[in-house]
Length: 445
Image 1 (cartoon, rainbow, N blue to C red):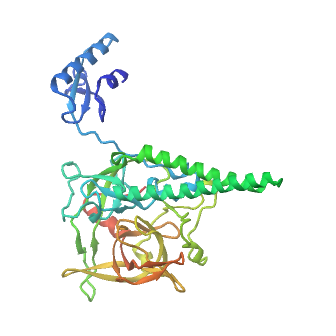
Image 2: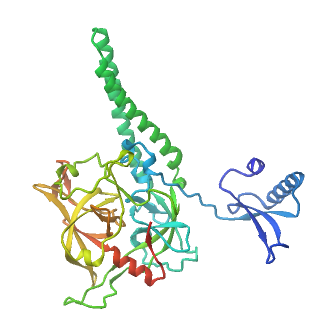
Image 3: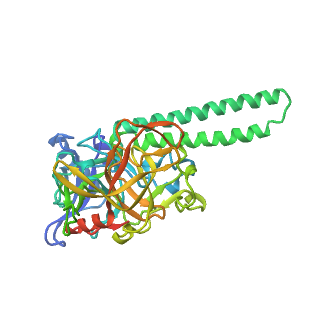
């Protein structure tokens, strides 16, 4: 490998050892070295192949060939295990972890951000697949169901360029605030010592804030090193998505002649392999607002209170069609735009009209307490997974009904422009059935 690194041009490459032939005993062992198209001239590649072969022969190898070939080399990012991080980073680093609500965009539409949802397993595949909305990955009305063909795939990335920049600026602002507080405590400690006072309490506070600053600075460097370049944020490639359609599978029409839901889903093949834990986790440590401070005990999620898992809600099961037809549920989601929000849903469905087509929708209304309100979703949240407070999957968010330019007072006490007053969710039980129609057998990872 050292020899190959020394003679190959900088940039992506891959190395494969294969046997080419029908009879494995007689097949010629071949070292394939893959480079991007046009990375080196043909003559240079031939000379490099000879040098590598001569080196291997000198080490005792024989009966093999060395070939260079043009290939597409795609480096995929590895999401970070959220439980490996300090809990103070759960919120700051959330979009790079195995949590629900991953901000995603595609190489085809690099400025259009959506939300990655549930991670699924498919039989006979060793990697996991992320569920999101069709219109997040494809906006031209196209479909892709020939999953063995790579022609129509597009790269999916974490964040857009602008959303990553915004995240970076937010982190810089947090670091600046902490740094100024550290300097302020340094000044107070110096003054206390000059006046002969005991600075122990000030030193303890200084130690805590300085520790938090070190944690943020460490994450800042890691974020730049591991995700700073747009190619380092490659998350996967589109895998399958049917055409967007309305009133799908309406076998028993109601009096409105509508019983089918909207079909607006897509699967993204990720680089996450089976056995990676934790996978489908919702981060509830939303320290930047007062969502949970406004809730009564009947609406609070079942938080884990043990050690480093504090504040994480792991997906556990799903709500069936029968479950969704009874009672009122408090539901949660984390989306790219509106972040962590709560809403209410029950057995009452909405109907959504697109041009002349109607479609049935599971409706989630905003959670309100007194004069405070928080929109459950906004543009950019499409694809987010909605779960109940016990971690059971309810469905996937794909659209909503807005309320114009109205301004509301949020849970943080500040005025905000209102988002959607009704959010449309496609039930998971129905999505699972539709995937089976196309030969896909999804299992929640």
